[in-house]
Image (cartoon, rainbow, N blue to C red):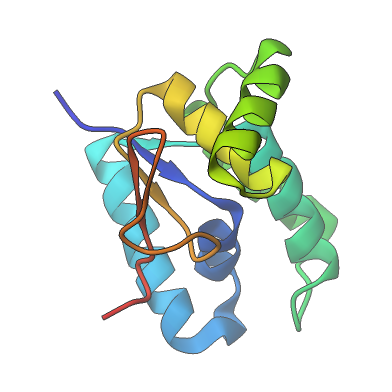
Length: 139
């Protein structure tokens, strides 16, 4: 059985932002590995944030048509995110004193059965709701 790894938006952005230097290489290799092992999962929130960021906020934005292709590529990784996750995220936010948006990521990772969240937005090595936080850019 393959252990699921939840991929946060920033990892996908770096994987597709060729101007991100070392972070691009690390993220690209990580995503390729998760793809090959069939262990990557994410939520619709991540894909929404990915689309907006790669088309509007990176140094050299990607064309919307290309960004849609990227989003389509990751659609098999999406886990169901029902409305009840909003309430679960609000509880995670309160218990762990993290932002609501980060709590929504944790709630989605929990729902997916992920053992790990790869992100640079939370504290490396921390466990939130039993899920290990890993920053792949820390050597």
